[in-house]
Length: 193
Image (tube, rainbow, N blue to C red):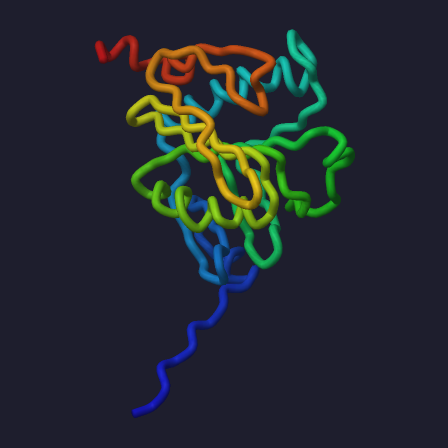
């Protein structure tokens, strides 16, 4: 019997040829695609971004010194990864690169969990973030209205806290402020849930 065929590693050209309506990533040498976030997820992402940008990027009621980017294309070694939201301390990203991607690993990432992405977000992407030295990882699940907070310690993820439904969030690295988790899903209060 012959040897099994070796799997061809995905290239940036493979990523570029993915349909425009899909998010494409190269994780562990394999091309993955998934649809853009559903409206409930997009609204939660926009609300979280709003909670963080004022105090942490614009210094309005907070310490400032952060930069945030929704769905940035990150080149972390051979992986091309697109978190839902990423943040860098200003001293680590003092200038934007001239490329369409960023090679400096973020200090914090948030992944919005969905049926299409949850398994990858909790496994391969989380390992890539740890390997790249991302300090903080927040999986956010609008389906169950839950935020988990992880911190990288000695190369391993340590779960710091879990916030559910309508609790107040004061979580590292953004524990200089508190925000109401329920604000991330404004339509849920009108649905009678």
